[in-house]
Image 1 (cartoon, one colour):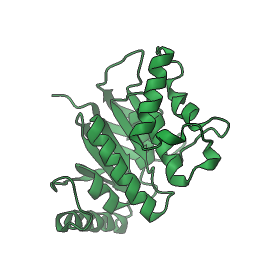
Image 2 (cartoon, rainbow, N blue to C red):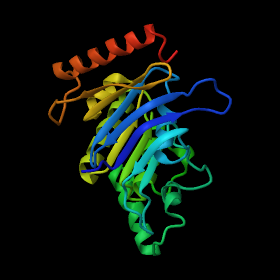
Image 3 (cartoon, one colour):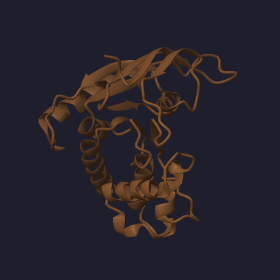
Length: 253
């Protein structure tokens, strides 16, 4: 069975660059899977996510998005490191932003927004302005905005990196609850290896010069997981050791 996202021999470069940022990238993302990408700063994690999203074109190779097209949904949605909320729009109207241009009657649009806010636990804050929200609440609004378009694939680019540690853990657990409730396929970019192992079914290590997916780690730990689980700690140790080897070889620097 074909994956929902498939990349084969993908290379990604920038105009004028001597060599590509990424090369030989192969990836098959299964429907309903939660996969995480980790790697050193500058390895091309966010660039790879943009290619998957269709926001950038590869210099070589094939990107196949086996997603259904429909007039009332967007097949792929993206959550960024910062929530990027419109300060002149309420929480409700920010969540509805991605629905603009879709073929949805007003009643269905309202239901999508209220359902998405309920999923992230912000149903009571629909009328607030972004300036009235905490950092964690703003990130939840960003997630709700992505969920409101009913995507098959949710791409997340370090969405929790700007919040404190306690809020980050709460958002991680909230994301897992939403994933379980919706069955949405998630590709999650993070610098935090512990976060990747806790959340994902598979952790993909991006590294080398140019970078590629150098290692894949299947996380066998049953859900729900405990952050102190010895099996998770073993995965984290392996990823850190392999990343250290890549850095010593010059990958990601």
